[in-house]
Image (cartoon, rainbow, N blue to C red; front, side, top):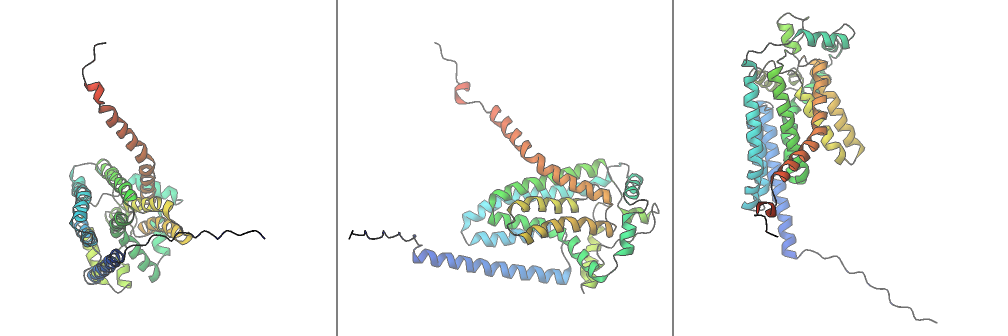
Amino acid sequence: MTAVEPTARIPALPSLPAPVAVRARRRIAVRVLLWTGLALAFVTMCAVNGLPTDRVVLLGWVLTGLVAHAAVDGWQRIVRLLAEWLPVAALLLAYDATRGLADGLGMHVHVTELVAADRWLGGGVLPTVWLQQTLVADWWKALAALVYGSHFVVTPLLLCVLWVRNRRLWGRYVRLVLALSAAGLATYVLYPAAPPWLAAKDGVIEPIRRLSATGWDVLGLPHAGAMLADSQGQVNQVAAVPSLHTAFAVLTCLVLLPVARRVWQRAALVGYAVVMPLVLVWAGEHYVVDTLMGAGYAMAVVLLAPPARRALEGVSRRGALPPDDRAPARIP
């Protein structure tokens, strides 16, 4: 008989020391408690006052949650959070301020060419008119209100989640959001356009109702609908081309699809990008051509942002001379 060598033991994986593991569990528990309390407070506020559409309010909620999240790790994490978020918040607020001024520059407001384009796409019928005559069920109105209102929440919420879970993707998404906002603002200034509900109000097209807030009555939250309608009256009324509601829905889909692991997640992302423009056209907020341009803007930003960043980095590297080039030439 041959001797059999004893099987070598596989070393056990290192485990965290007991005090460290206890502290980690405590941090997780504290964060869950803080986030749960903040989520309940936000839902309560929405139920009482309506869904907030003001970016200052939404960023305030996001930063409050992130500060609570970072405070568990100490003051240094809070400093890093503020250093990364305050410039982003300042740029987004500057976009909002200039967007509101874009309709006061005396530019011609475009109406008829958009109507003609949509009539051509609809075979002589405005798609908004057909949709408002066809989609009249209460369930659709409720769904449309939620989808339309999600525009104001999804982007800041996604920025919040990505900062906590995937800092690299957060940086990419920030750059895309800022680029898309800048492209939309430039178009609003150069090409102010009236949405369908405004064209109908001025008698340019057949009667169309503005339906984006009506679904809140179906949901039993009429005050939320009234708040949304009031906030809609305080923004630029001719910032219709492109549809940034569509653009940001498509951008969310394009950014998250590569990291979505399950089929239902991919289906939800694609469905969101498709349903958003359908809601906008039905509600009289945008023409079909506006939504197509919004989707095009989102795809263009995603495609052009990486080459533009590489080009800028190349310019900055060429502009910084190496130490030998700055030193005096040596005499051979």
